Length: 200
Image (tube, rainbow, N blue to C red):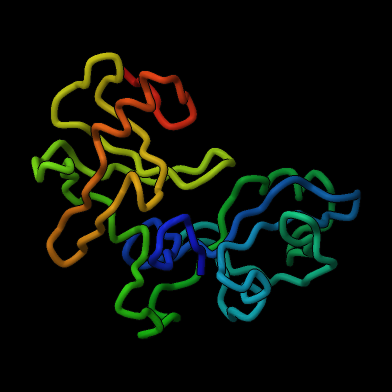
């Protein structure tokens, strides 16, 4: 499934029962075709899943590949037959049941969903917050951290690019991830707005 800038292979996810495998983009043409971005390691694998849902636990849909595009696929979707219908699903994610993947994860693999709620520690081993969510605004995956205490000039929330240099350790069993806090703070001072957001 999706590789996201770490040495480990990462799998998109929202909760413990449903795994996100892709997302719809803009409508294509007037017959209801839709652009699709796949999160799977081999993008075309998204067409191999038998029970694909629109939203976690949502309506079951079927996908038919029309063609391969620069950033994904153009697909025909069951129940969508007009441009208006296609525009209505823009941004919606596609899910499969987690159980459908069985025991396919290797030792160094995990679902991003499993990181939500984990303790976040600094390079000194100090607890500084919790993993609140994962975001991707188009450039790369970002680890959203809810800080225990507001960080001066940043606030209670910070976005760490999910790269080995900034998120060096992911310890699911131990219940934490570590971040290079000082390096990240220096990048904020240097001015990299795409990696942080002040929510007050």
